[in-house]
Length: 174
Image (cartoon, rainbow, N blue to C red):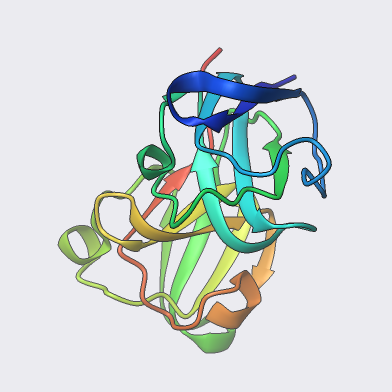
């Protein structure tokens, strides 16, 4: 079970809304979001209702302003609680449709270029757990949540291109 609290103003001020499960539309509860406190669980937040728009991955901690979660603005309109898992396994491919070099990964990667000499991932097969892909190294840039399943091309996980700089497992240590 997870718990997240959204605040309209920076520094955990103003009107707030507490949530403990997926919510496809947060608009009725607050008009803007400038700070967040995650008490438990891992969450993916979305800029628009129905899990659309920019995605932001948050784990337990305090985020006193939207820049702390790499937000582009104060718009958070839906959220998804990511299930807790203890094992993560993903296969990444250098070409669409699971072609080319394949690498099997079970841990986080701070820099795809430094570790594997790759700057792009064109297809992914998530076998276990959930993963977040980041556009830039050091877990920066646009974020994409990948659940177990097959992603034959970058468009399948919502990216405009195949550029991936880093990735991490979604794990919350209670």
